[in-house]
Length: 387
Image (cartoon, helix red, strand yellow):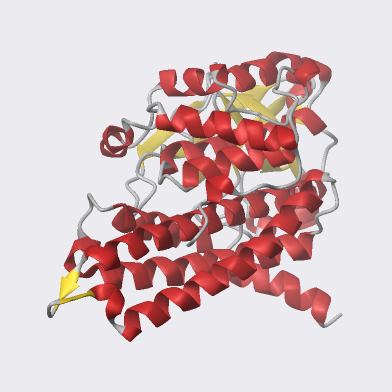
């Protein structure tokens, strides 16, 4: 029998206990309004506050900084338990908030910035977003056109436009990636912690997406946005290095969500084909069905061993850029194949939006794009391989 993700043990009793707690929260109805959130294109602010109160946000942020004081293994549990249940809105919105934005603030923010934002992020009283992608620049940092220039008084003035920003329409805190030394290309990038209520910050249109409809996604515009010198994260022109140091975690959490989803969709499909009758026989009795599911089950079992090793490495601070790129590329590609095959096995029902497999199919497609397109992941791997 296929073992559910929720029964898996990493290596610590505390992780098992935390998984049980998160699973109970989900069973008690967290995410019960997900269909309404999909129709609305985002989640109410109360969802974030509830998540903070229940310990689902900023899980591995130290307690002294306002977080839960857990490890990355605990953070991975939240992603898995949401992904395995198809609660994609919280899953991916929380990933941006807890696993991308919060580490930048914790590691590179000034004391004042950390004190202002970290406790609020952990409690869900403030929502975080990162504004990197632009209409003409995605993974290519040297193509970024948003600029930040320092005026005579020491403040920074930010101008530019961003797009495809998860949590962008509701974010209280926005990490803005901007050129501070345009002549240096990607090496002239800096990061800024910008309060979303700052004059000159404009929210563009709400973007309608193929999937992940419960995740708020928006355009952002910065028109002479003035921020104090303390808003600079780390040092001037060091943003490229900061981004590179955090990308392994970003890519790993995407891989974690991808594999949990693949495992879940496979289990759902196994149950479906046992019940569905075609030509007087259960669909599961056809060799094409059984071989297809057996092959993908084998691939997810192998992938699980690799991914758990990556997760352990990240928890120890040892996950390297290339291994993270492999995890992201391989597991998002695997998910794409799994959901496509499982939609096919569901027949016409697999094309109906009320079916979990249909939502998973729509949600899965972007995972091969964001966090760095999979073509970029291959470039990262090939550079090391051929060096």
